Length: 252
Length: 252
Image (cartoon, rainbow over all chains, first blue to last red; front, side):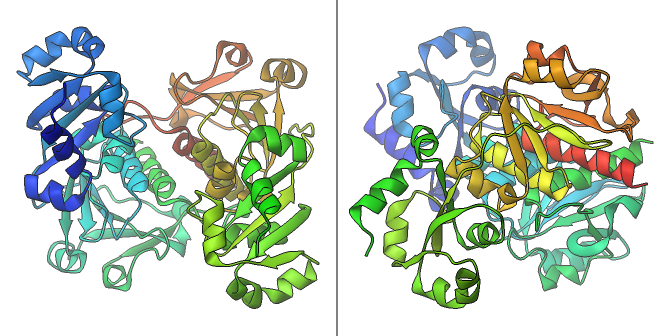
């Protein structure tokens, strides 16, 4: 039986202020919780149905996880979350640690991506294409937002995000480096050659694209060629297409 | 002042059964309604704020549109829709008409894509890459679902969908043609050469991929190469990457 305090605590973690206060966040659904158990995140506790607990008892024991058995009704009562099917975990957030590209590595830079679904999708796509560092503007949505975690489908455990003032960051860390920005009206992605030396790939805000403060550091303005009538592509889609072209070129 | 009957009518169109009964559907938000006005869809009526009506009076008059002025509160009361900012239109659905590829044309085939957001995204992506025919299994979500319309960002006006039994359809229309299917574990997309002769590009269900009944017609099983740890890509993302590779190759 879930205590009122625990219910209150979990509900508080849906709000950024309380996630920051407690340095904790929620992970929901079997797939995401299993990926969490398989990661180096510190887990506070897991709430599971009896079914899930029996099915994954070995994993739960191996990780020395505090698991409380709850009913499906109790789980459903906790969230507005679609993925909340058989378990929910609360884990400690990671420190916001400085990240920059290693030699010949490409990292992703996000300038004010606001939609949690988009950020989650971008994390999943980055993970697919082997990008594990994302530098985010301070206004980019919080990676520990439950909707971001859910949309990332477990990839939040493998991709690291660093939130910072992008203008200062790029001024200090991008001199002499490739800074490739996705713009409408830039050069064709199909004619562009990604350098083997690595660098930054910058994606902008859903409505306004890349802001002026960041644009000044962009060395290459690139556009995904359009054939038809749609005005724009969603930022998650555009990120996937950029990274796909990067990987295809560099895999040759 | 919105009549109770009109409110009831609009609310009924959120349900497929009533969309089919009335052969009508809802379009929300300034961008989508403007694209609708610019299309060949027959419009029943538009509800707009006074602001929108003044700003776009020429367009509304040119199209001889029946526009009722409503308050923002009335509009908000109508829907759970995020995009419902300044107007809402009701238009007549189109007949479910047979579609097949013209000479050297590629068309998209969707085998049970269930999520409205995914279908809307796929329509938008198809539109971007100049694909304007999509053949859908009967279980694919309804294109006139308000969430599909919203996610397509106006592209539903330029892309035609045909719902059918895919097994019968492909048996009758795919003989001797390229039927390229997105699978996990197929040949690398990067090594694949799209033929100039056109054909079908098949995308499968979110959880189960392409079903057996459709798989038997697939001539080329293609996989988007993965570098990192994510288990899969969202079907909207995968569609974009497939179409991007198609267009890049054929534009050379």
